Image (cartoon, rainbow, N blue to C red; front, side):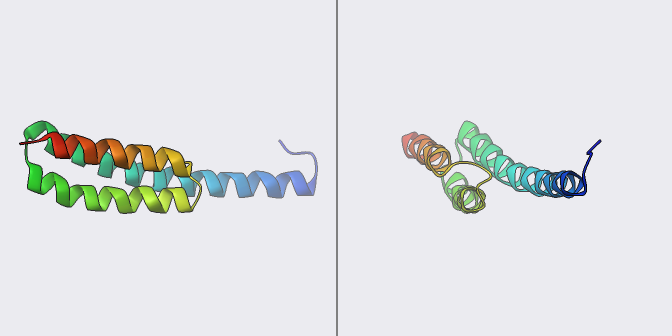
Length: 87
């Protein structure tokens, strides 16, 4: 338990931030999983539509610093590359 008032406030803030970050992270991970499932199924047009949503979720997570900017960029690039390999 925190020993000072400021430590107690910092703990409350970190719990609030953790909760928010987990929601944002869950949102983009779900979007990425949806794209990967469609890629595995070979559905190129549907995967491309899902990629747009995944890119948006990744950009928002990077903007809010839930993940790093380059990590979001890397994930977007790899998904787009996988979709372009589909016939």
